[in-house]
Amino acid sequence: MDELGRSEATKRTARGLFVMLALSAAISGCHAEPRRAASPRDVAAADQHPNSPHHHHGALPPDIVARSAMPFHGLRVKDGTPLPPDELMDALSEADAICVGEQHDNPHAHYAQLVVLDALIDSARMTGRELAIGFEMWQRPFQKDLDAYEAGETNEQELLEDSEWDERWGFDYAFYRPLVRHSRRARVPLIALNARRELTQKVARNGLSSLSEDEAREIPELDLGDKQHRAWFDEVMKAHPSPHGPSDDIYVAQVVWDETMADTAARWLGKRLPARQIMIVAGEGHCRDHAIPARLRRRTGAKVIGVLPVVVSSDDEDPRGELEGFDYGVILTPPNE
Image (cartoon, rainbow, N blue to C red; front, side):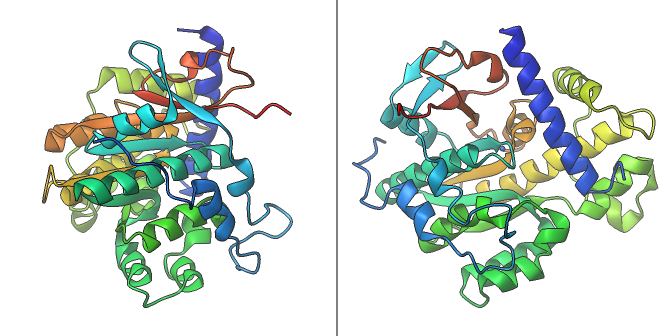
């Protein structure tokens, strides 16, 4: 394992975990036919809404995902084999669940997610498999708001207001709009995966024992004994130690996140497995093997893979140091000027 790559990946994941803990107030990610004419870049470009109240003017351009498109190839992590784009998408399409990690504020990662979604939609149309997309960004109680939006009963502004997007997630919706709108157009169900912020906040501050009986019923089965996952978490926390003392309860809150998202995905997937498939959109720490993927496999026996988009400066750069804990990488390279 490349030490520099591991260090950068750990720091990046630590920043993401720290941001999410702060947001939750706990411590305050068959063979495909030729691509359709509407490429992911086209989809992203078509979904520009500069007048949306959830576009933060002066911060991000509305076409941030479209302009972040890059050439890419795949990397199979277990043996380091590079894969052309079509072979990568074929491999991902064979899984029951595909967890595509992200740095939440990295538009290149969101472009890669859009590319994967587009390929899975194509595959589902050919195989008849029912595809859904699950989001860390929405919490379980707001499933009704996603359903209403998907059914055309509400518009985008109403969805974001009803689901308290700015308060509960906070990242610019421009990062996610292409994914959501492409899913809606393709009739791909939108699933709110995550636990209520109030639960993870309370657990991180005071532990599971602080939950009321009603709150405790919202917590799924937890595996707190995964030593590799705990070792990874402890390494991440070294970069951002908690000012509130020992990290045991914060670790439990992290597991509550992972287990809740795995449980939500399993409930949808398990109803008609193997006729169903789900793409999971979550922070990269959640898509590592011992996070959502292992916990979803435990519940369903499904084939679950973790995927991480990585931007490299050139084809000569080795990205494997950043891909520990993942099955595949989407390796994006800036085009030659």
